[in-house]
Image (tube, rainbow, N blue to C red; front, side):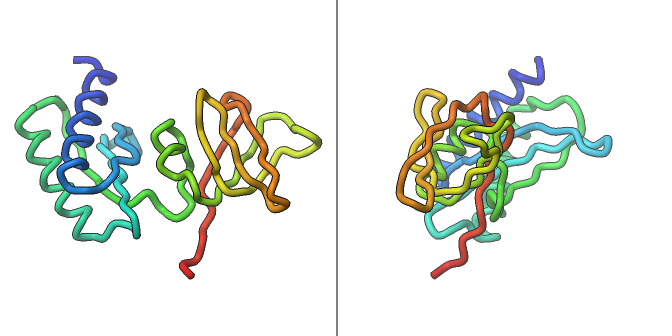
Length: 156
């Protein structure tokens, strides 16, 4: 089975577990770092996830992955929260973090700027819309964005 097919099956299993556990699957990826294989999963829920949420999710996903026997090599399963200043990579992440403050770095300047910060208002059809400090909105085509990441917001 190809890596992409394994990745897809892992994501599907993680989505099913997330729905049962009442959390949102933010990301599920197979990555190779320092010569070791990882299955990295990020989950979230309103108010944030706890270590217990991650542990329960990890146990369930580990059991399902063992049953499915998808991954023919040794790997480490890592389940965590999305992180305070997470880089946004997938459509699912952009949709999940609507309402949060983000930073956008562009490949090329737009109106003389390459860096924009604001509240993520929407993500639709490859268009990222943020509300900037003056209350206006700015649209970015996804392919013009070099990096988008969450910005830390202290709890009030």
